[in-house]
Image (cartoon, rainbow, N blue to C red):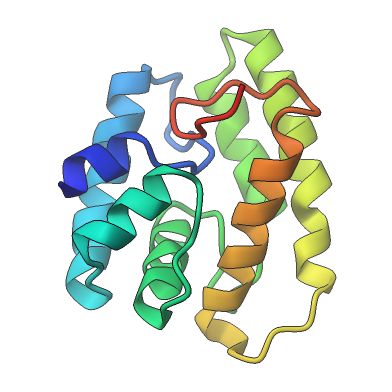
Length: 153
């Protein structure tokens, strides 16, 4: 079940020293998600909701997403969206795909605003992860971002 969820995960795909295939990116997110599911276990129902680009209103689901975002470099240790690091990682992964690189940059730039929002969980980043996810889902169609994770047309 977790495999299906992680294969459809909405997270922006990036990171690494070279351009990676979608399969390599999926495998990397799967490994990170497995670790996060130990610390923040989510139910099969919650996995399905995440697959549908919805974050369940449970602390474990929100913190699971934060954990994956932190492990993939999207959130820093203080629970803030690290847009600069995220952009740097996409530049490596999408170096051979200028259209995907450009739409990724637009998406990440647009979602910097989540760092201006007040959250009550501080450095945990669980609440900010919900805001970031929402921004990704709402902004992706506007910037024509095509993702292996976001189920957006």
